[in-house]
Length: 211
Image (cartoon, rainbow, N blue to C red):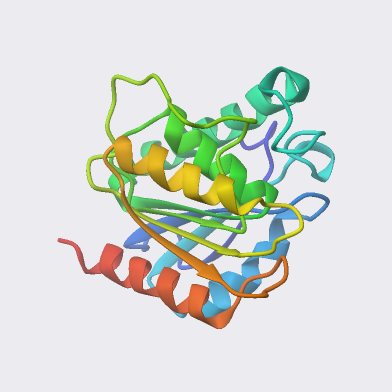
């Protein structure tokens, strides 16, 4: 799996880590660009894995485009996330010990993945992100997020992420059984701020504290 889908790693060795965070990068970025977050999260007992999007992009068009316009790239990218989770499970990390954290396009991919594959995750964070597709009012699923802690943070005037999509994503993930915390920041750009870092750090602290 790793040969076909390169994964960069940092943090605690996978043989020693208490938990794992899958970091999903934004459009045009490299996997390792997310490792700055690993540094500021300040959790030395966590391993961080960042898969690389083919060509630097998880899907070619806006996340607001009809789903079929981003195929087959979107399905391939969702499969990369699934393969990464499967690889980690083989190393002893089930989904309850694995968090997904994504920024921008990577955050959209993370939210889309957990909406399509609801189960108990260690934590989920979508930073400047929303569930993919023009409408996210409902999702057909027989599964449940089973009280997974989810954080959504975004500006009220993000040039890429309409505020309504953040609200819609909160409703969908809550309906699927997620414990969603949504924070909207006035006049912030398409970026990650200190408060978001603190909130994700708290999620990860709770994750490693679980028996």
